[in-house]
Length: 131
Image (cartoon, rainbow, N blue to C red; front, side, top):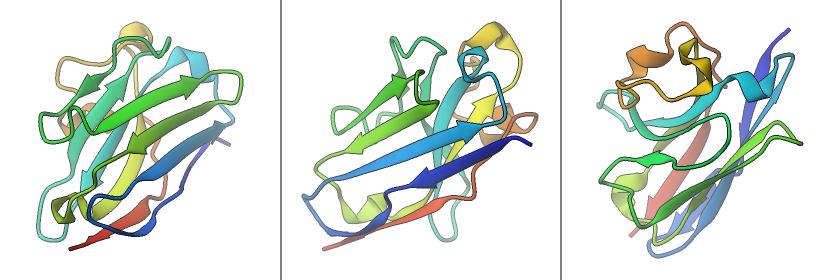
């Protein structure tokens, strides 16, 4: 049984940091690109980062570029999201999801949640940033 589990969310003040982790089991982790997505209340779920199977050259949305950094530890089946200089607008439920197919590379439509509809999802972790 495939499972993805996010952890590390919480409440933090603006300007603070959090590190999220996405840990997988039951799949060949190296076969997949993995994305971080988030969904704020009343908004659509959006991809904010996608990392290829190797962990190299991740993609970032403009809204988080320079503040968020992903790292991937394939020995632990884990993808991390280091979030620095957090802002109230970063408040959302954060999810990780695998991209299906594409040989472990991020799809061209990596920012769209639809790109992961055939993959595996975690249950999400809440991040709340207070002003």
